[in-house]
Length: 257
Image 1 (spheres, rainbow, N blue to C red):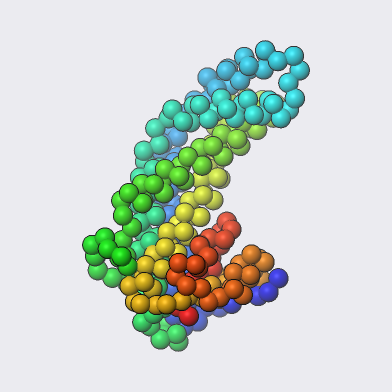
Image 2: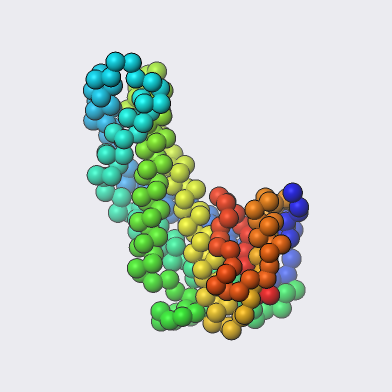
């Protein structure tokens, strides 16, 4: 695997403020979304799901382990889907809007700032929802939140179902502990933030009249083959550029060609 073009441990020039903003963006998104999830999950009780699961298992002559896990996951998903996740939904939408704004600011800096200039930049003034705007529409943010939350609940139910089926002590507690960790939500939020960030960058390039962009790999050392191939395929038109992220925790970016 080749080395990353943008080395995150030794950032120089305009990449220093760009990635300072981006890393802070992801850290803040993780914090607000996970905090909202924990508040929403407070009081969640999986005992009814475990009872339903045990009843279903009792109707099977000799349930295989896979069947046990799938049945438990379905019971958990029923509980999670009926629960209110309003704080989490709002936090995800906010994180997506902030990411789009941050991506737009980064794109604007990459267009207007000297590559060797590491002067910090701000996110710029507010603007109406038009083509090239730094702002993500409320509908898009809400749609992002719905997609992330739906996927997170499904994946979390699968994970909690495995914990319940494999439990040797207290299935409900083990399942609830798994839900509280929110591992799948964290990964999905990170991906959504990167996607919104990339969309914001493209909006900035569109506003600036940029015709084509480069995919630039970024990381602490070497990069994956998928991102390396995306970089090798550069330049791209704005409409044909690969979308961020290419994989979980991807920190690559799009730059004006």
